[in-house]
Length: 420
Image 1 (tube, rainbow, N blue to C red):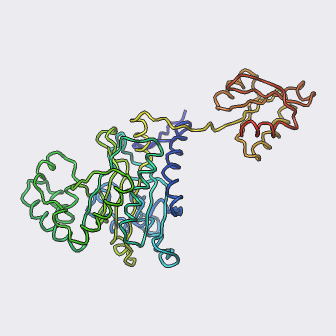
Image 2 (cartoon, helix red, strand yellow):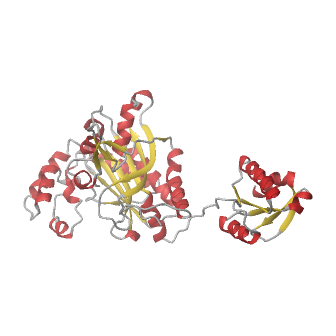
Image 3 (cartoon, rainbow, N blue to C red):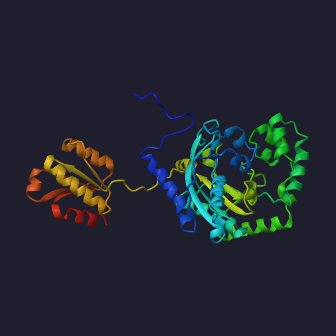
């Protein structure tokens, strides 16, 4: 027996559960592909500084959760803890903002890594599908992002999720709020790490989930009271467009998300059936991130939805996705001649686009039929020496139980007809 196990805080995706994860990824990606977003894939690791600058040096992600390594050549790398910084880096490196219309609309799917205490809904290795619209400042784009994510979740059948919405202001009005918040925080009884965080990025303190901190935050200055006229107008337009699309949301003045690069619009999808780890995805506008990582000014907006947490949300609502069987036809040969003949038919069926499997082990009919049943195949093709001598095979409908002979040279066309 193997003594190796998956690392702590990770998991293996195995059939048949893996089919649900694939279906969730597809459901999230479908509205994006239908809205002009092209697929992008980035490396699983990047320069540490990319995340230090973009995500924020004061965030838990950078200070506590990143997996870092030093290469033999001395490069400092990190396994990617999130997708936006990598996608923006790739777009800038390829000059996508110069070769086409703005915004550059991209979507991605992949694995991400954070070193944190493992618990249900929070893993050290997790999967996300994300979308980024780079190079345009338009409230309709922010609204589109929220609407597409809502559409993806509703396509899956989810209903018991909520959308939280807030505005974090911009470089004009946020500094004023920052100063007011820091003055408030300096009067609280906070631990040394939190005091340091309050000086670097005080909004991070609002995101602190510890009850003793939250109790002290009662009466803290509210960002909406400090928004400039431009940010207020922008936020109201986002709210109006989302509302007009029939998408419900809740205003949440404390919503800041966990990353430093957000400006103006920020939003989060939460599902109360997940307990303390209720967030299933979120995002927002990040107008200054490109400049933070050495690029030109490129106002942008995006989101990432957790595949793992979406699956948990489906389970919480008792939703079982209707996933087609991986196999439509299962071939069972009885004897060596039948083995060669049926294997050739299996190859033909696959070339014709029919999902087909084969009884490889040469087991008896009873054992092979059990395997056929487990495969989920609608039809089983059985052939022995007598069948072949008569130029036919036996086709059994696994739903009705009916079985009838079909001419060997017509079986591919007949199965295609029956399967539609």
